[in-house]
Length: 461
Image 1 (cartoon, rainbow, N blue to C red):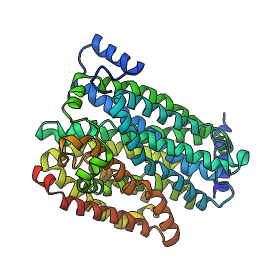
Image 2 (cartoon, rainbow, N blue to C red):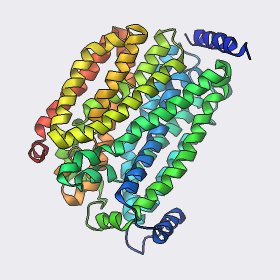
Image 3 (cartoon, helix red, strand yellow):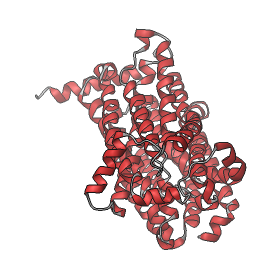
């Protein structure tokens, strides 16, 4: 199939070319954090709109890194790192490495919680975002199996693990706090703001890869073209670092830190005090997190392996569907403030359960079916994912809220998304596409059960 892609790609290309930090002064600050303070001191105060933009930029950079790696896991790594097995097995192995970042995230939370307590949030964010950028750009220099043999797999695993550790360190708590500290009738609106980073990151990553695979030969793409998006990721991370540091040095953010809203606590104490709520919080957004990969990473792998469709076409469909996803995320904010976040999450889970029944039929129904699969999937994803941030943050006591929210996010991504592409592809290759729908249905059921247990959230909404 991969050889066929190369042949089809080159044939079409030839035809086209033929005509032509903490508040205490005892905690040191990084130079970037100092510069952010200087900017704030010489300009007007950072308004809520700028805070929202900073949050979106930060989340977009994270998700761009995420999707660049995810797309490469389908189009690149099976051929570059696992060329000694068939394309399906290579993609399965690639997805296994993909899951490493989600396994590493809880470990990263332990590490960066200690950094946060001892050196401040500015130092933590600086280290984490530079580690994320370095781990991502390092993939651009990944040697192939033909150059270093099995060491190529080990090196890729190391880089992916580093990404996971770093992602945990980029947690700043603002996603949950925006919703928690917003006016009662605007919590849904503020909760959706950080979630806009996901579809925006996908649009940029998909568009960039679509441009590359349609502009150069498949041989050149696999040899060197795929490396450019990883360089772009590092540049975006640098911009995101300063945008986020400007937020964390504001008096408002510092006030939240000093009041305990952003106070990092020891993991052992946090789990002992908030373990039950952490588990409920991890499973409450499971439907949206499972759907997240079922409309982004998994369908790309299925189309690439089992159809004659060119990758660029489906990447464009993904980018266009993500635009619909942006509108759905924004709509989720308005709906949540009108009908309640819990009700919207529950209704979305029911919608995802229904979607899981006919979605496999759509994905296997040709060009039109793929488009309907993606558009409907992104509408449901936007409505559910838009309100999945900090679903049970209010359940946590103030002292443990910051670290509890970080652990909840880590576990939700691990259980709901980390293994989704791997499991869905393995099940579909063995039992047909219908089995991927059953996997998605299980996520919706878990969400409904978790929401039923979360009585405090029900009382607030």
